[in-house]
Length: 475
Image (cartoon, rainbow, N blue to C red; front, side, top):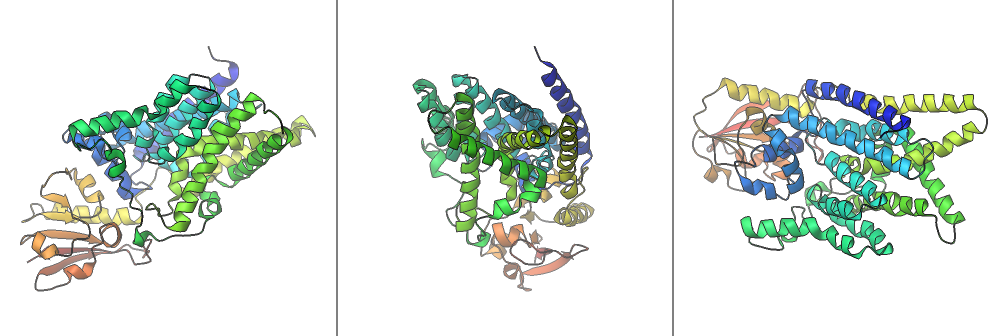
């Protein structure tokens, strides 16, 4: 059933998954604090509040995939993300094999060792499942399992919204091969969720588009350099993989130039199903951040979504570089492979230690959580902006309970809060996403400032302000 190379790669991935699972379970912190906690809580409470299975920000397909594990606990969702990541790496290897790469194992190895992919295995974020869905579906399409590939790919936008950007380009491969009916199935996922939303909650057949959670303009996110995602290559792909990625892209362009006539089928697959989606994805996010559109905050984590495809391109470059050494001697080739593999393996640990401790803001919020527990019971409600408060206290944030999220951009907190209520204001979520300045709570006739929590080592939020947490109580 499996040849020797597949057995070796499978054994490596199985051993790696076990080691990674242990490191993830032992981690107390997360790279993406607020978002990963919010995704988990949406999945955890979805059975109690079924409308959460259609929550656009939470990503409906992702929520459905992880909701059963979320009932066990956050660690179970993280382990499921580890599983998704290793499935992605396995299919990156399978794609490289199918495309005729002499050495295909680097595709799996580089997928897992890309720093930004590696760190998101320790999370409940959507990027890893996105990478799994697109990698598996593209492999099926390459193997001419048109229907299976199309149906799975059709749910990609409900793992991450960028799926709506990628599917039109991948669909060109269906049209080029005259697969008309499978081409139509690329809209299957959108039809399914449109109908579900219409009958069970929104009563709007176009809710998928009308309720897009990403505003066209979000002024406080700002904008940045057009090359932002490339210039941060050391922490996204890692320098060794980025060199191979550039080499692979050059090799493909050179091969394309040589075949000015009809391209061979393998190269056409690589161009349409690996290179094109990878470049489109990078350009889309680069332009969104450069122009300050689509609520882009320049988060480099988005590149984890297509890391297996980048790894396949990098694998092509790795093979080309290795061939240059192989032409000299077998010994030169082995030295190159060994040294390069060690460098690739080291890269993620330079930036993201595992087990991962709590990050700076998470440490502060953990202190706030302990302070709240010591004051239990509190004579009033607790309002918060940072989801870690509800996450760590195991509170349902989707009911009007004693611990509840505060409304964003509310200019009248004194009217909303009752006497004795606490407001946990922080310089990141409250001041930015919540658009609620601490000045609104500074009226001493309405509020008392009970506590101020600061990190041991000061740091700034993305808008340049010092991070601080202030707890106010309504008089």
